[in-house]
Structure formats: structure tokens, C-alpha cells
Image (cartoon, rainbow, N blue to C red; front, side):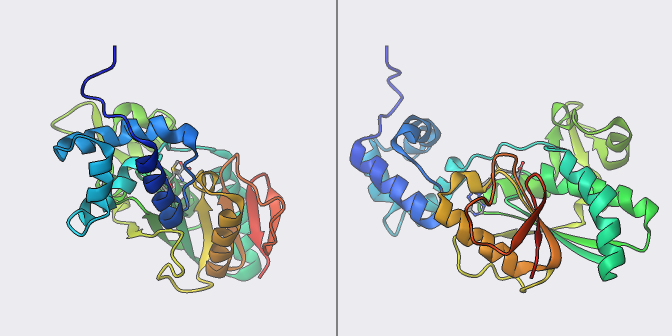
Length: 279
Ligand SMILES: C[S@@+](CC[C@H](N)C(=O)[O-])C[C@H]1O[C@@H](n2cnc3c(N)ncnc32)[C@H](O)[C@@H]1O
């Protein structure tokens, strides 16, 4: 029997929402994503006291609904992430690439960007990897920008509070060094304040023409498991924008199922899903 509290999405409402999300955020929403969309937006429709998706769509595209429209993206984006996800990337960065990069270019002030940072596991993993690297190379300094299009995930990343199970992939010696137990809830841990302070946050939508960041300024950009949600031409445009923000010799890391095959971009593959900007 159908749940009486579940609201079905009609064809026209699905088309209006999906066209908007693809146009504004690049995220593809083919018809087979409709039930995912319904289940993610249902609570919002109910909380607004609306009876159907037609009313919901009219509301979010009206002047009064602007705020709610903004929150639709928080509900639609897929934010799955983990500490030390695709851990070979962090190993390659600090064990192989940075020592070579620093001796070749003499760059000790590294600028790193976690683009599409979700709830913070990726940029905090970068902090752990870089802090460990600095123990061997104390002359190295770094700054780390974490960005996402969703304000909700940026707020979580800023807080740096996680369920204790979430830090299972973190090596034991790093757990002690970088996290502290919550005093009020033993099931929670928090990134230590001196490491939380290392992150700068910014809301960036990759569909925007300008990201509000200086050109040729980053040594390393991680943009992993984000481009899979875009079509190929959009992926290529976004990668060109990343290249404009990389220094020559800098690196772009993509996710395990993403690639630049068939794209005309100034990048050379140096490892699976790791690309060097040739300038
Ligand atoms: C699956 S998570 C990936 C998180 C992390 N990079 C990782 O690999 O674990 C994808 C993130 O991309 C963000 N995203 C989706 N569309 C975006 C856009 N147009 N601009 C910027 N970020 C976007 C989502 O909000 C989400 O947090």
C-alpha cells in the first residue's frame, strides 16, 4: 500500500526541477533519477504544507520561494565521501610528487584546493597528510581552500564533528593526533581546533564563469567524484577553469571513475586519475 504521506512528482514538475538543476548546477537528472528526487524533496514539500509538486515548483520559482529554491540544491546533491578515500592519492602526493615538485620549482608555500569538499573528510585528510609531511619537511607551509556548492555540507565541514565510525579509515596514530572525543557524546569526535583553523571555506558553483579566485595560484586541486554528475562538455569546461587556476607543474586529482579521455585540455596524465598542468 502506498504511503499516504508520500507525494508523487508529476512529469511537468520533474522537468522543471531537473532542467533548472542541470542548467544552474551542471548536475544531470535523467528520468531514472525521478524517484531519488521525489524521496529527497518529499519532506520539504510536506514541511511547507503543500499538497503536490506543482505547488512546490510554483513556490520555489516565485520571489517568496527563493530561499527554499536555494535549499533544493542541498537536498539534491550526492555528498558521499570518506576520510582517506582513494588513499593512493594522498600517498602519491606527499611521498612522490611534493618532494620532486619542491626541488624542481622551489615552491615551499603550497596552495591546495579541495573543490567539491562535501562534509570535509577530503580536506581534513589532506591536512593530516600535509602535517605528517611537514614533520619531515618543516620548511613547507600550506594553505587549504575547501569549497562546495552546498551550504549545508560546508557547515558540517566547518564544524568538523563526525560519528566515531566515520574515522575508521584513519590510521590509529593519526586518530590520536588529529581528533578529540566529544565530552558530551562518546559516539562523536571532532577535528582538533588547530587543524580546523587551517581550512578556509568558500561556496563555489563550478557552473559560474568566475570562481572569485586568483588565476594560476594553486599547486594542487582535488576535484574527485564531482564531475561524474555532469555531462562530458560540462566536465571539459570545468576542467579548463581548473587549469586556469593551476600553476604550471601543478596537479589535478580526479575521482576513480572520472577521466579526461577525449578532452582537449592542457593536462598530462602521470598516474591513474592524476594529471599535471603543462601550462
Ligand atoms: C560525492 S561528493 C564528493 C566529495 C569528495 N570530493 C570525495 O571525493 O569524497 C560531490 C560533491 O560535489 C558537490 N557539487 C555538485 N555539483 C557541484 C557544482 N556545480 N559546483 C560545486 N560543487 C558541486 C556536491 O555538493 C557534493 O558535495
